[in-house]
Structure formats: structure tokens, C-alpha cells
Image (tube, rainbow, N blue to C red; front, side, top):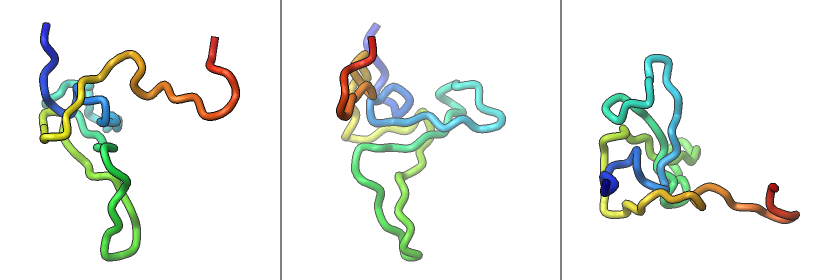
Length: 77
């Protein structure tokens, strides 16, 4: 089955659990972490919040290696 090109299926999207969220793409909320957080007028930086069914031109397929970055030390067994 081909992946959907929506935020909930993108390697850059980080799911953020909400009280009424059941991880359904129609209700899911998360952060797009494709680019560094942008600074707002109040000086605070944040990633954009998106819905699971949103999409953009930066979509990349999620794979098993996504999010498994080891910084220093040896990889987990």
C-alpha cells in the first residue's frame, strides 16, 4: 500500500497527544519538525502545529530509521 502524503505519515511530523486524540489522522495534532523552530514576535521559537491530515511540499516517507539518531556512544542493542 502506498503511503499517504499527509503530515501524520511524514518523517518530519512529531505526534503530540491530545486529551481526545485516538491517533486518528483526522483528529491528530503534532509538530512539523522539517525546519528549525521560527521565532515569534515575543521572542519564543516554536515548530508549527499541524493536523494529521495536513500536507505540504516537504513531505518525506517515514521509514524504520526515522528518529533513531544516536549522538555519541554506541547504538542500542
